[in-house]
Length: 583
Image (tube, rainbow, N blue to C red; front, side, top):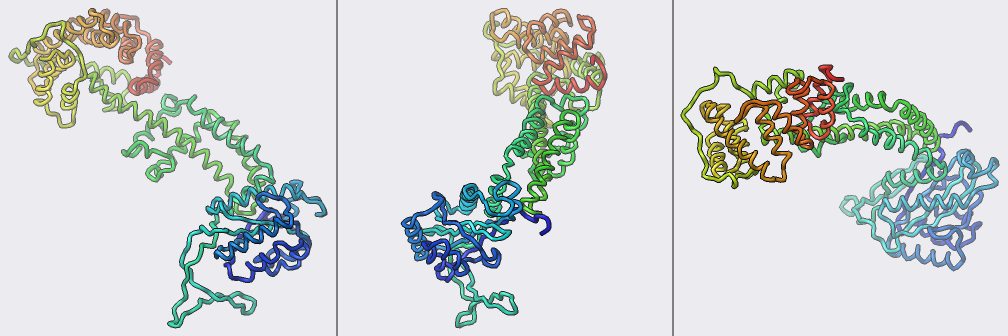
């Protein structure tokens, strides 16, 4: 007989309510199995396909394995009522290769013993899924198991007692046979136009047939355990472990990660999804990272996954035939899709932190603009930042008239607040097209109210020449006023001491409004152990040996400890690693 081409095949056809096939099935619902078996050809749409049945089991339904005579009569009434209401009757055949059933213990070697109970149970689940997919949950069906030499099959007839199926316009056809071939010809009206009628939709979707077939295979093959294991390897052993191995700080992945990040499209970050069409051009890059990740962290799990997938694919190939030959590809696609989304999630988080940093850089006036040249080593980054922040070359100091504005605010009334005017002023200063006049006007208004952040920012205006001539003396007066106010708030029992220590420490570190004093700066930063910027400044001082002994390892540990909290420090860590210091 050759090899098994397909263990199970499912086909569905339908007949309209006024056909002989429909009426024939109704007439023989309540007859004996022998009589129904002898007259199957009168009502069965699949006689040629099925062959000549030698034996037919009793009817069974969604609720009953066997029907009494009364229950058969009731079923006949339901089918008759459906016919009167012009319901379509669908006939489904679930056909098996008996050798395949024998492999899974459903039928014995010579076909004399069969597990009818199991087949009926499987058929119920399969038909239910098929009808649900067609939105025919209110339909009624009956079935019977038919035996012949090598092709056991389950015949199912389905109707809607009260039709709820969608109606569509259909051209009406006559059918005739010529030389053994069925020829379909449209019925024409008096004008020679095809006759069109509104009828209930008959054809089932292919996905419905596949759901029916899939349930049969899964239940008979009993492949749940292996499929669960395959899914667990993909989801739990590989994908979910990704969070234990972030690639944004892994030296082997950082180049690929940053390369991918730079190529991400500038759209809503919610669209950064592996299956989104806008990511299509980047999938090879994402898959490359996934492959590297699997090879580094999950070689054994991946080998087991491939072995289980190949075993399962062979099982399905036997059961379904060639229709499931892509099982392996689909499972590997699932793995790479899930891993791809895990990579993109880290990319989104990285982007979120970077954008947050950009905003906080404006807020905190962190003028170490590390994003202008991402290929510069950490030494160069900090040196450039120092030059930008200190900017104390005498050649650039242009003394102006005394522009310092003394606010009419008592020291006990000063405050620091990210007010609306202050935030707007910051944005106007750091915008690509800055509006210094408007920004300075807003800062002066805030300064006169006693807002120390605006006072400090006016010092920055005159130190860096933003909309004003550079005037170190004017800058120093604003810095001194700000520093005095920060110290006053710190000593006055202000709750946010860590933030104040960071601000004061920064001014001592750079000598803003006071003499540069690394020792005092170090003391302030140590008093702000939970402030991420103060932590970074401590790491920086350890890196350069400022007020402490130079210690690359200690600096690196600080950068590492806060790399998950802040994209800025995470970036520093990656550059620090590449410089080969402290690691």
